[in-house]
Amino acid sequence: MNLSPEKKIAGILAPLFALRGEDDLGIGDTATLREFIDRVAKIGFKLVQLLPINEIGADNSPYNAISAIAIEPTTLHLAPGSPQDLTRQDFDASLNEADVSDLRGGAVRYRQVKELKKRLLEKAFENFSANASEDRRLEFRKFFQQESAWLGDYVFFRVLMEINKDSAAWDRWPAQHRT
Image 1: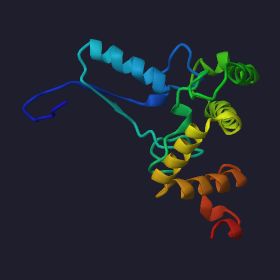
Image 2: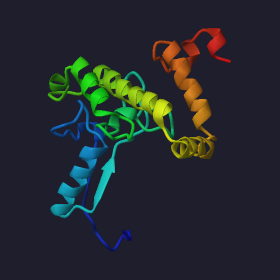
Image 3: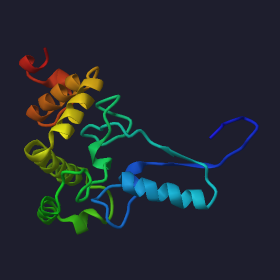
Image 4: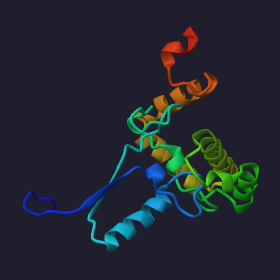
């Protein structure tokens, strides 16, 4: 799309977390975003702008991101086969442990949604680690190398966050975790 001050277009600003769908897991995600884009395009909008989608901290504010690069994992569409290593069995078992029907109604319950999506992503990674072909493992290593400018430090930071009760306030961590 060519943007120009002479050519007017209409668009819409939306927080991704609020774009809820029938089968969402308690928060708007990339699948509902695709549906939203199609819907607004049909009525003539040319642009969809989102609030920041970087990974958020404990206050759940899109303006208080813990990374300038990492995407908020709760906004990923997770379903059997998406990601590839998430099985129907693991998906259904995780949903049975969570009260998904309750998550699908009302305001976003961030703690529960984060727990559910983290569990699903961990299951997918366990399956990948156990079953991935050598080609897929090579792709993963290649991705890690291509993103090495930030990914290693970010992963280390996330591990330290988990050790410190999911707190991003590193200045309050024990001294051995701040160096």
